[in-house]
Each structure stands twice: as structure tokens, then as C-alpha cells.
Length: 307
Image (tube, rainbow, N blue to C red):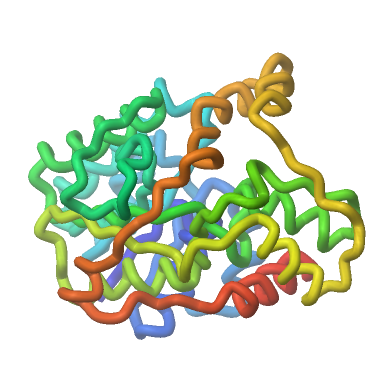
């Protein structure tokens, strides 16, 4: 079996590459940054391809010999409206031509606000944000294409190489002994997924050939508060400085000067009324969801930052 991982230098993409290697799959890792590809996979039996997913010819060439394509590419929020449909269109075109199957790494934005219960795959998707509506439109594009596919929904990531995430923002400062901040209410329970766990789950779906067009929720280990996260990290690192809170108004103020921050404001609802996933479908049809204890996941993540 041959697999292509698009976005292989990202947190989930790199974890998927490593998981496929463990399973004996022949892997091609595709990303724009060849230096980062070499750094991540220099000692691995991985074919490295430098390319741009916005270049149709490069995508077609990379997908041509793959049996399964994992789409784990992410782009900055401020590019979503104009670029996400083009990105997905290029991938779908290449997959249709090659006859490959498609596994998509997705978030929880399309579900919209917390419905008051755990979110299942049958929960009506009713996004109220621009980015949630874009995700729903992308899902519709994929379904209408007719390609064999699956969509895996994950909560916020943390883990080795999972940069530009909420917890990475906090962990980077702590690992470097700087003043750290936590985004959102520190007393509010939220869930986060350790990227190697997410990679195991989506790879298992792919290996079991679950490409019938279904959605799959992959929850984190459990819900955890910011206060609990900080306490665990203090125990692991000895960090003693105060960890302050980043509020919605602070992000809104930063957004005056930073378009990325400006786009984060509408997603802040996830820090006020969190959406929590139900993984019952996966457990019934596939098996136990990989769930690394937070303490272990945090330790490995912090070690990765220190390298």
C-alpha cells in the first residue's frame, strides 16, 4: 500500500507519517518546506516531495501513484475564504484522476455552537461562524465529488510539531522560561487531542477501508481545565511564574494590527462554550480510541519543544 500525506510537516501530518511507517506503509510526505521535511524525516524511509498544493500539476504528480491520500494541510485563517475551496478543488481533481481514496483531517467548526450535549456524527451541523461555514462547504464539495473518502473531526491539537495551536502558545513560553499566557477561561473544561493519538485513529479508519463517505468524531482523552493543564506542566517542568489569561477583548485589540488575530475572534466561542465530541461511533465500529494520558502527552510535547 502506498500513502501520500499532504501537509506532512504539520502536527497531525507528521504524526500520520510516523504512524503509517509503523504500520509498514510506503509513505510519500508532501509539503512546501523541504528543509522541514528533511529535518522531520531524515532518518526515515519516506519519499520527500517539495510542492505547493495550489499548483495543480504538482498535486497531480504527487497523487498519481498513491492508494490513499491524507489531507492534513492547514492554511492561515485570513486565507480561508479565498483559498480553501481552491486547495480542496485541486486535491479532489487529483484524487479523481488517480482513483485514490481520501482521508481528511477536519476540526469541529462545522458543528457550530455547543448544542448542550456531546456532539455525535448525527448532530446537525449548523455553523454560525464564517470559518465553520467554509468547513461545511468543503465537506459538501468532497461528498459531491464522489471520491471514496472519510472525514475525521478532531478537537484542538497538541503534540510534537503541533505549532500555532492554543496549547503550543502556552507551552512554548513555559519551555523557554518566559512569561506564559493561556487563551480563554482557565476554569473551563475543554478537550484537546494528542496528535499521535489522532494519527492512530485516522490511520486505523484508512486501514479498515472506511471510505464510504462517513464522518468520524475522534475526541481527546477527556476534558481538562486550563488550571489543571498548568498544574500538570508545573509538576513536569518546575515552572513557577504566573500564567495569565488571554481574553477575547485582548485578541480583538491585537486584531487591529494583526489579520490572523482578527480572524481568531469569531472562534473564541470555543473558549467560552466548548464543543465536546462523542466517540461512540468509532468505538462501536472500529475499537478503542487511542487516548494518551495528558501528563504523558504534555511531557513528550515539552520534550519536543526543547529539542
